[in-house]
Length: 378
Image 1: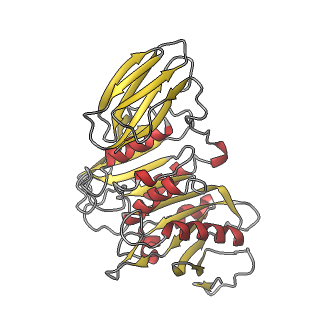
Image 2: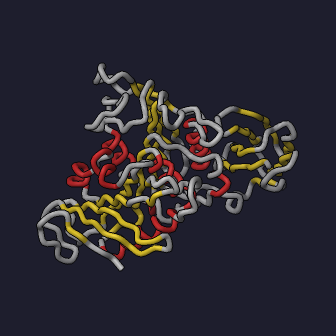
Image 3: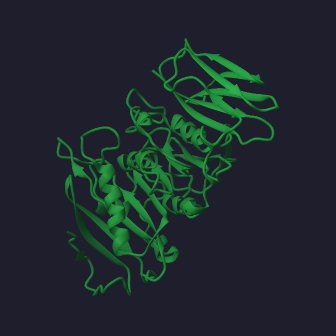
């Protein structure tokens, strides 16, 4: 059952809205009654399908705070999209959170899936343009949605969140997934270089760039340092060239803290050279699921066959049915090149000395699509 409360004194009839309206609601779920806030801009009239942006709060925060901190309202007022800010449940310590493949046993994945369906049943949503972003734990959850709810999510952007080391084996992502990562190098809460529990930012970027089939070497450009008193600078790192058109983009904030760039509320070192909300929407607006070309898989590549099991054992055996020479490369998730070899008909790679973990295999040759596959060694 849905419970609707209007935060404004305006009458909200059917799907029509005459001014900006924030709706508070809830849906019943196996995890309990789950609440949310939904922002409808004045331009929304219910006649045209519009994009939906999930805006997920951080650990210990709430959806009201996230609506203010990661503010998309002014952008939605002109771009005409709806903003959905769900509320996470409390963990054992009584702290609101998202179960982004770590933490409690709350099934937030199915909750957010059900919530998207519920909103789409009441509002005119373009289901090819459903995006997710979030702060910290909300960024972790957005990347979890990218990996495990790719059937409903078109693109994601994480601000100060990365991925659990346990997450990648759980991923079932199908097709391309555009990803934006915004992170400060001096983040004291979620380490930029990672730790025993969470992947570093470079590993996250390499994982998604490999999945999408982007060029392994990104372009790097400085973000103009228009605010010289914010204590940090930024650069834009872009992995492009994917046949699917799905890019992986990173705003690297040197000396930046655990903060949302461009936010009006500054806690710690907050970059003011760009507005994260504006750049996230510009990134999202480029992608429509119906226009993203699927990435190649082992079932659609007819010129190469990997005969080794996955998880792999001590050897990777690759059979090539292509007349031109093939370049084989294997990278760690951190982007380190572990193996490079050219060959024609059959290639064998010895992995006996490799540590257990996830690796990225890239195969390319003239006249055929580049092929990328994730390999797991246990």
